Amino acid sequence: MQQADRLYPEGATEKFLELEHDLHCQFPDAKSDAAKLASEVLDPKVATADALWPIIWNKPIHAGNNETGANNTVARLRQHFDGHWREIFREEGDYSITHQGSKNANISFTANGRIARDLLNADDNGQVVKDVRGQIGRSRYYAIVSAAEWLRRRELLDEYPVRDFADADLRVLVPKLEDELGIRWRHITVLHLLTDLGIACKPDIHLTTTARVLGFTNITAREPKRDEALQIVEMTKALTNRLGDGYTLRYVDKTMFQISKLLFRTPEPVRERKTRANKLNEVAK
Image (tube, rainbow, N blue to C red; front, side, top):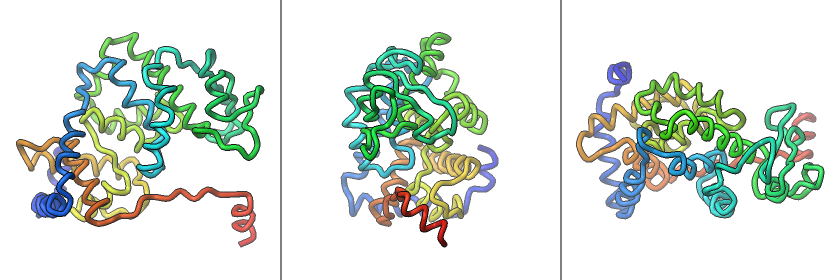
């Protein structure tokens, strides 16, 4: 945080306050929406596994997806995952799915359990039915199952499984969690989880856009690399500290998101789905 203070751009706090004022004038509900999210942050020191699971399992669904599409998928799948972290296993039971081979390739996953086959539209051998999309991608589903096992391991050690996150150095914690959680849990997804614990923010396209306007970063990539993302988080924390009483990291994070999405009208990311024809055309070029 000391480095962020040294690098903090002159005029950034004033610029944020100006943009916040414009946002609330044009979109009066934005302030209450941000305040509501800030009030829902879990304290990692006292959060139980039951409280944590609802903010964990949906994160792989949001990874690389636009907000509306991800929220729709989460709503559709909530009945299958909410409250079920104790019964979700990779190797056995209704949720069972195994992985072997290439990291994210569909052929590397086998859906063994009843619920796994149903949600992934897999046949009795656990393989994807050709040309029929499942309700969720295989690697995203696998990431949710992995997260349930990760949460159980932590609960065995402490009734408050993420108590140690509260005072952790994010530059150590984030890569550690990427490694522990595995497939689909890259740095942006890990930071998204930590956002709901009030100790980080998620440098998606919207937060990064506003961060660039405030002078926190000059990157233009769709997804910042880990070091770049952590710098944005550190700068946003420094901004929150300068704003003083009445501002929390989660409130500032959401407000920066709204400034980009509502004021700047930054387009939502669209992930192009490559077909076989697309790939052949690329080869031909």
